[in-house]
Length: 119
Image 1 (cartoon, rainbow, N blue to C red):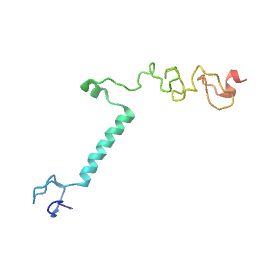
Image 2 (cartoon, rainbow, N blue to C red):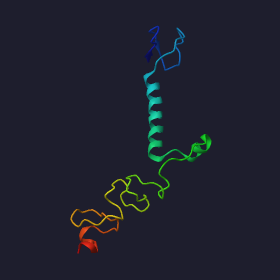
Image 3 (tube, helix red, strand yellow):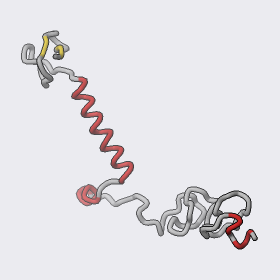
Image 4 (cartoon, rainbow, N blue to C red):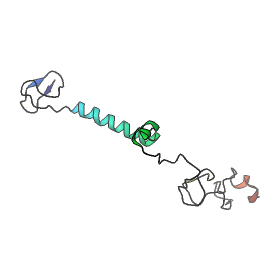
């Protein structure tokens, strides 16, 4: 049971308007459902991107980072398809391997002692 905000009468279930005073009723659970649906849609778009059907319908281009050959997130002049850590400008195929930091600095899949330049 909920109460009508306007006339205070008890309503058996949630309705858009009170059957007694015809004023709109406020339902917390209805608002929470709407907020939950909006939040879910936002998170899905943030995690998975906007769907191609939506992009076609709206005429928008996909501005995500699907084209790795053109993106360079860390600004080190090495594109994401070649850079093994495109969030760190100090790690890319053009930097020398540092032999004591536990990181594959030059993106050759060899860390420190494994790398021939460190032997």
